[in-house]
View: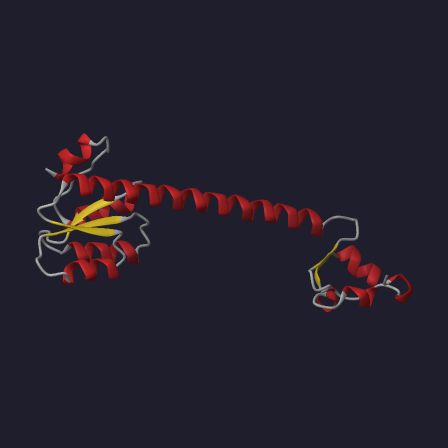
Length: 178
């Protein structure tokens, strides 16, 4: 029934019956979200969730529980579940949770990609500035030197590590301070 609901909403579904199969599939596949029952043969869904987190498998997990107490749901959330649904579940509620989980996963992946690109551009920029033959010094809003390349260090006749953190005016002739 779960697969029929999700496939009917346009999701590609990989169904497994055992916890170890879920761990294997989620560890090796590229999934935007997972729906995991707390009660599985051989191991609990909470055990599966714990292993996924230990292996740093980054997929949001919506947990299903038939338990009448809130304890399983609280434990699932503590283990890093995205959210939980009680059985019998409302298909509309489940579809909404899966859609939110997919959107969060997509947003996190886009943010990670953007962060990676920014880091790479920063590395390229730093490489170019550090190897430039021009004198390059960066100063923060308080007037302290936060970057100094080798040509600037040579011109100041002082090692880079002794220039960093100093007031920029220290390196400028007093008559030029204005």
